[in-house]
Image 1 (tube, rainbow, N blue to C red):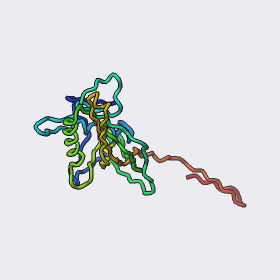
Image 2 (cartoon, one colour):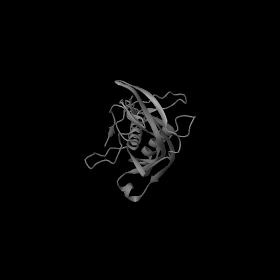
Image 3 (cartoon, helix red, strand yellow):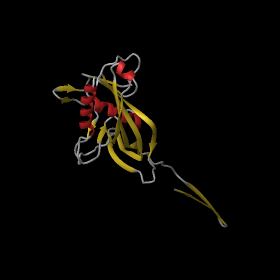
Image 4 (cartoon, one colour):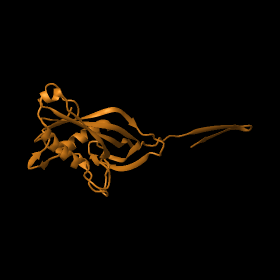
Length: 226
């Protein structure tokens, strides 16, 4: 589990804000594709801050998976969760191969045989309606940051520098008597997410050997080596 608390250094996830932003793939991988997506979104939400109605707004902590009983609850908080099935797009197209320079390796390639598709939910916990409204105002700005696409795109240095596209689905507000008694106001923001899946391959030296061919004719045996 990764926990991002207020005051912690920001993560390395990058928001793409220009349509012509050049992408450079690398060989760095610290997670699988699905975990890279939840980690990257958690880092992005941890980086958000705004001023709403004269009040500074940001999350006190963001989790990339469910919190444990040992974690002290502070608000506002968020947890990024995979929802439902993680699927892989049909690989009916020819895989794209991107060559990257690797120190100590003559040639290396990243092969993308398919795309991962999944729904990610961000559960947001606040203490009252006013705090929740401020947090959601900040999130609305964050999930629609550019004009060239619907939603937003993040780049993950910890997964080959791959880029994932996030399309907001909607938000579910959960107000009930039980939450009111505990002074909790919860909302879940959901996204459709797609990202290329990459696999690193390197050149395999060609086998070198000798072939010995023997031919027999009516006049005798002919032996040839190459």
